[in-house]
Image (cartoon, rainbow, N blue to C red; front, side):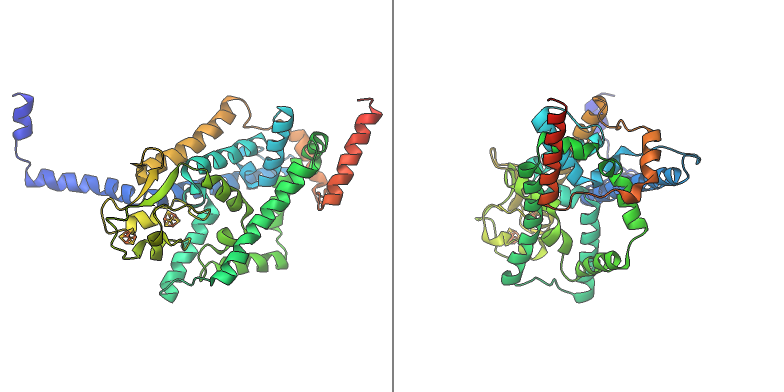
Length: 378
Ligand code: SF4
Ligand code: SF4
């Protein structure tokens, strides 16, 4: 029997049922691929948190416990130290050894945003997933989305940029290579992850109230933290403006139904523009999925007008992030070079280490490091 004869055989009812059962999970996966990626990344963060918890317990036991593995992924939660490491690398060509994984995670997140817009927020960030879930809950409770009026929305949105400005100015405009090194070498920076752990483990009533308020505000006001306060999101929003991928509307096919704008979590008026150029667009593709007209609303590569599918965005976002963090592993920049003995020593006094709190602190550090160089005849 040749190949064409085989293809001509009619498919039996049982075969077609089996085919449909097999294709159901695949279809579900394709439909919900963003959620799958988000949950997968959130579970990875939970796993890192559990491992880090045991590491801190080992430190607290004075090194007598049973584990001492510190997951480098925890450095993804130290964006300011990573930003300092980035500037230190740009000035000196060296990657500081305290939190090298943090630097590569930061680079991974920024590169993903440069290529696929602010996609980190809607595809990978666990805080984004929590905000989105709370927003969905709010939709169910209130039956509609609360959108703040423009006169309030715009000034609130600028808060995250002011916070970003503060960090960028403090690091890139005030710090020198010597003061960066001094800070990155400091016990405070080395155990910043442990201090962050204790911040949440022994959280004060005030901090708990602030977090709870932000949490509950995300129910009626979609993505409250991400839209108004997250400086990381502000950085990625700026990077996303340079992305060659944009949501594009084919005006001749569009029926002006407005469904895309209604579903957009970032309140972008997609139905009024041809191309979405916004620092708030997270490439979530909700608008594309909602549009009832075929080939009308698509994420496109602006240079070739080629449409990019949900699956391609998923592969691109996850692949790029893995590629860059994988480079850290291949170049021996994933694990830091702090020994367990050093960690145990620093942990003993973890409560006594303070950090830079103002421009004056940074200037003082600059003076001290300059004097240090002079005293050593450098
Ligand atoms: S719904 Fe569309 S325009 Fe709105 S954030 Fe998502 S991708 Fe961007
Ligand atoms: S959902 Fe589609 S058809 Fe409706 S306004 Fe948006 S782009 Fe036009």
